[in-house]
Amino acid sequence: MNTPPPNIARVYDYLLGGKDNFAADRALGERIAVALPQVHLGVQAQRAVLRRVVDHLVREAGLRQLVDIGSGLPTAENVHQVAQRVAPETHVVYVDNDPAVLTHARALLADNKQTVVVDGDLRHPAELLADPVLHAHIDLDRPVGLLLCGILHYVLDDEDPYGVVRTLVDALPPGSYVFVHHLTTAGPDVDAGTAEAEEALRQGVGRGQFRTLDEVAGFLNGLELLDPGVVIVPEWRPDADTPSPADHPVLRLAAVGVARKS
Ligand SMILES: C[S@@+](CC[C@H](N)C(=O)[O-])C[C@H]1O[C@@H](n2cnc3c(N)ncnc32)[C@H](O)[C@@H]1O
Image 1: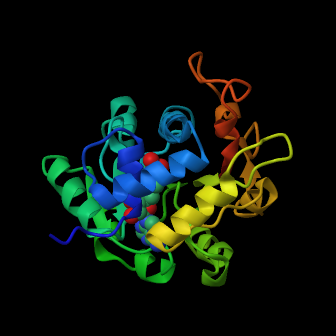
Image 2 (image 1 turned 135 degrees about the horizontal axis):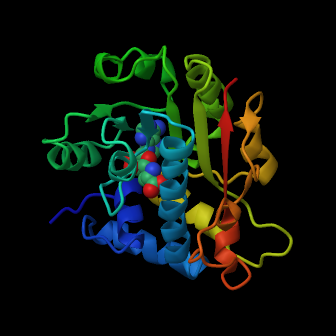
Image 3 (image 1 turned 30 degrees about the vertical axis):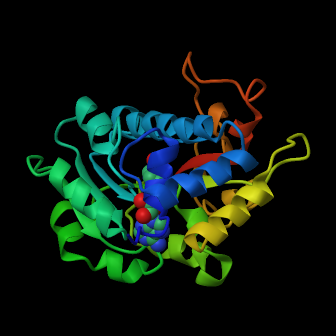
């Protein structure tokens, strides 16, 4: 029997302990885990910081519109659940280019009028901005929270990742926020297999480009960075139960930042 090749959303689902994955996804997940033992802690930390950021954007910044590009397969504590727990009227648009993600998300959201799913590709931001479903749910004259969590490392340098983000940010009104979560190359104090993990992703799903902390910060250039700036994941407004990077060096391999457009 032919099994589908590995795919980003399903490998991530596997690493999160989900069931929406096939043999090839599990094999690639295991290969990444050999390069980066404890990678599952990294993906859990990614979900946790996404929850902290969404809670901040809705509760503290008062946003009522979120666009989550590269939303992934539904899992626990999805963006709309975190946001609408604080403010049920919050509109959420999920965007992904994976048909399996779109099918799952649509089924999950059938009864939720505030949340929609758009078939779109981050690498084509102008098309995304022209999408009629996005326009029906998001008023681009009112502040928007743009979530780019765990996706920009799949946009390669020759696909103009900085231009992509600029096009999206230019379309947002003042008072909007941008969140970036990005895999990073290991610092001198981390003895971790980022190069092997990057290569496994490249061979497995055809793409993957880790960037330095400075390169990640570059995505938020020209915006007002919120404290504590662009930092490794556990340092962004940790909860009492956020694991420490001193105990788990794998947590140093992704950076996040939130910035406001003035
Ligand atoms: C690792 S998952 C991240 C899920 C979620 N944002 C999170 O952080 O937990 C990356 C998602 O980005 C999607 N993706 C990758 N490249 C994309 C692109 N160019 N346009 C839209 N979605 C993309 C994949 O299909 C996948 O669902």
